[in-house]
Image: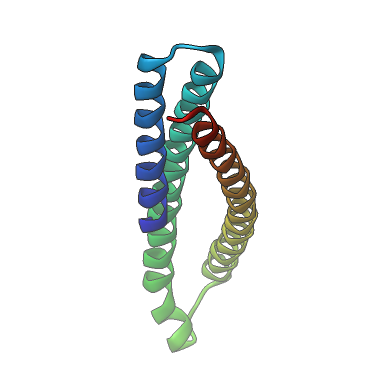
Length: 129
């Protein structure tokens, strides 16, 4: 969550910088940079919402498993309880796999954004901004 917040704040700063540049020099490249920064911020907000939803679901699963555990500890769990526990654990595994895939995608996106930002800074230095 903290990482998402940092990323969202960074994207907001980039968007604001692009707005200022666009106000000074409304050329196509600046408009494109502003559009890209807005897209990045929108993506970061979406990622934050997804992370919050996944965290809420993980907590709900943990609570349900906590409620089921006494029956397993006492050796009195029913087949329905065992099936429910199995389903919850499978859901956790699936959620973790999706999170790993999302994290890998985020790393790729971050690298791409860093490259784009570096190019923009180099172009700005060449232009004397």
